[in-house]
Amino acid sequence: MFLFDSTIDAIQNSKKQVVSTFVTDKKFQAELTKLIEAQTEFTKSQVQSTLSIAEALAKNAKETTETFVAKFKVGA
Image 1 (cartoon, rainbow, N blue to C red):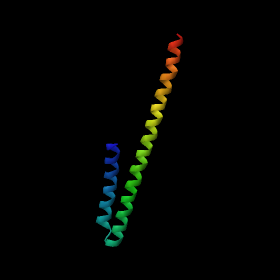
Image 2 (cartoon, rainbow, N blue to C red):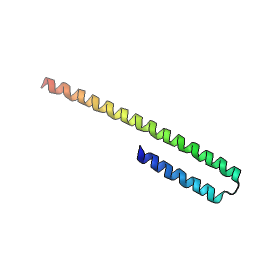
Image 3 (cartoon, rainbow, N blue to C red):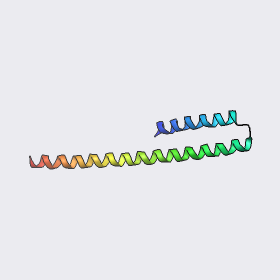
């Protein structure tokens, strides 16, 4: 998870840097920064959800395979 968070933070921080460099209106700059922060939280939660689903699928596949193989070993 650390790799994903670091990558997301790097991209989002670069977006904030672009906003702070090129947007001169402080109010608009603050709103864009809030939007970027909301995007960051959303993206991190989506990555966490995806990883959780992938872990559950991998665990289920492993358990199913072990059960399937065990049935053939017992009968052999």
